[in-house]
Image 1 (cartoon, rainbow, N blue to C red):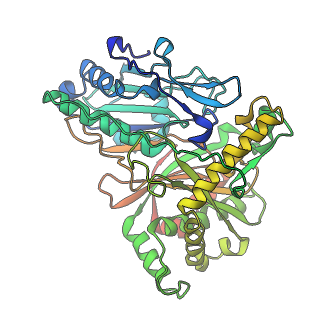
Image 2: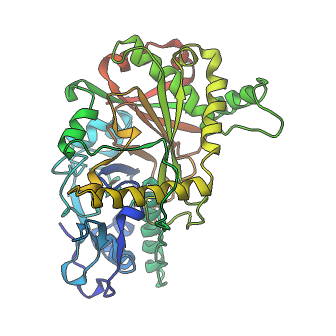
Image 3: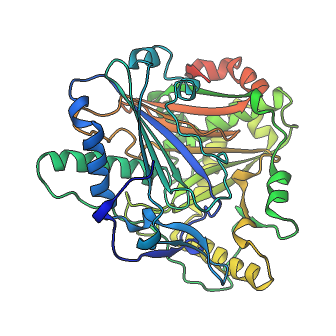
Length: 462
């Protein structure tokens, strides 16, 4: 149910032009769940009243979280906050019959989240054309043995992964501060300002299609997949293995003096080699080159608050040839190429990309396109093409949300986008947890790959 803010609803009217503050104008919802082990302190620190009161305290400083995505008469897309017609977030509570111990024994399987009612399904699915849905939803499930599961889903127009985990961590910190009669610290905002200039170069990652309606665009870019044949698995790979591959890349002779690669570049190359090959070996996709893309957080480059609410993400594309993907000895070369693609994303390039989006949006409006926000599309949405995405979240506060009884013991992403891998850190940061979603035959091929299995261990299957 919607949170009743009472007299704590922000009074100031705050709105933001969504078409110049985020690349995610589509109504896209992405969920995660955090698991807390049983503790006597949970009853006190994570009770219904405590969590409701502390969330109200945090939200009272965040008027944009109460906004609606609205189309203005000039067809700009705005996060519009009106205190008289607020779009309140949701907070639900649930007494679950499943225990933390049972969930842990089964590896915190993704299917157990839905089968035990720990989730909050979005009515229209992950992509919704409704502008009335809340931007933020939480469901707190009290497990039968005293554990707690905190399910969060957010609208990507305002919350990327960094923003969500940072918000939940801030909520947890606020809970502890209120217990000590301290004034909570409001979250910061990370929103991109566009200069609205014309003439910026077109970024390769973004396309505009005005030849068909939104439903036709979605249908055209969606690979025919049987939803009953999709599998989501979580694998673990030791951080020491990525460190070893990184050093081998540095010693490969590919890099010039002063050049370097990151652990995330190497991890992306390793994932790309094995998952693209699994897709082609299973004949899910024809053989050929793939676009490997990373999601890049623009906060640091654009001087935005590093833990602020917002969705300043950009997808960085790297075209990798079939031969490079098929031969494991080319992993170092792919890592280097991914690094070079990321390097081109300077603050100037990213600012130009945002300016190009703003200018192109205005052109769509001028040409009479009725829903211009639905005609900008990105590589990551096109499942017909050979695209593989990797989002590395090792520098995001995934495990920082301590409400007073301790940090979460496990976190799971519930994304179900095919050929999109989310790499979360392990609780001890000594490994990466790879959330992989593939079609059944491709997942079978991946799990039969000795090279993959030599470094990755299966944590849970669907």
